[in-house]
View 1 (cartoon, rainbow, N blue to C red):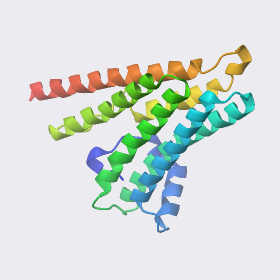
View 2 (cartoon, rainbow, N blue to C red):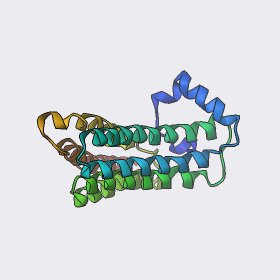
View 3 (spheres, rainbow, N blue to C red):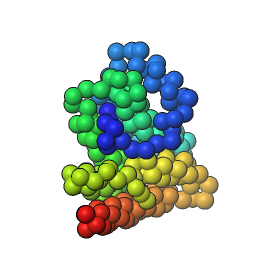
View 4 (cartoon, rainbow, N blue to C red):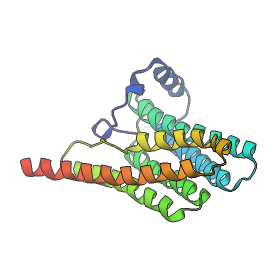
Length: 214
């Protein structure tokens, strides 16, 4: 769940399909916090699929695993969208919603990015991407604790990270055509890690600049 003061601006929130899903979920007993927890499940499946794909020799099995990884990365984002919409638009917020808004996101980044790292045989790079992804959220919350609005800027905020990994998973399905193996996933992990590092620096600089301006 998300509150209005710490809510990521998303164009998809204004779409008819998102409104329809929100209305349907609001009519059930499903809570925003449960949707947030479901995002961890989706991320765990995505991470496991990435992990298995990295060591699978059969091209067809690898393609199925990568397709599943891409799908569940997007399902993770869908859960992240709907938990806030059910909480705010449908009026089903809970007192502990802020906790469930943040913690599942951090766990989800860990499961997906570490899964990729171990799957392609570069666990250190995977953990570096995890650390920097979590650091982007830390800097955002640091800014809020300093009295500033939440900064969701990129270039490698959560939606950007999941977009990179989703595209990489789909593109990596084609690697057997040129006898490649995990090169695209390796490049994607570098992009996420370096992009997240740049995001940390950018958000940090914006905090410092705003504080100095008074």
